[in-house]
Image 1 (cartoon, helix red, strand yellow):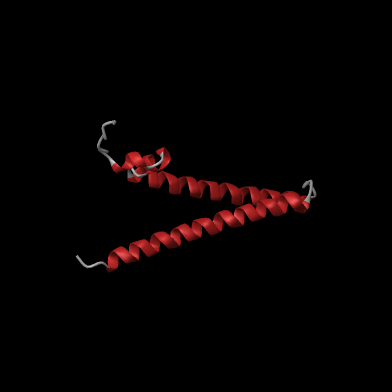
Image 2 (cartoon, helix red, strand yellow):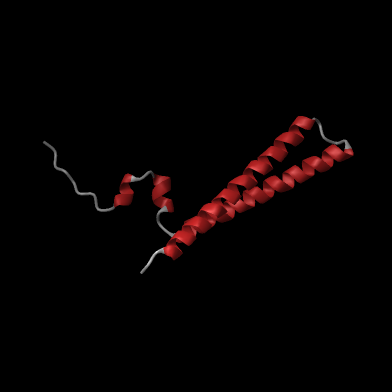
Length: 97
């Protein structure tokens, strides 16, 4: 029979990415910053695609629609993340100490 070793840290049971993110607040801030930057990039690409469509440089309307939908979905995700963060903050503020 083999010996059972105690687990010293609960984070060891988590996947590597989750354990890394559970480590500090800087990772969460970095995650939010990256999400905002990706959303801004998607919005910029959608704007450029619309400009190309207006000037006749676009290869197909399908590419323009895909760029616009990617930007829309990205923006919706960021808005939902903001809503969840605000809800969590309000819930914490309602707690009695």
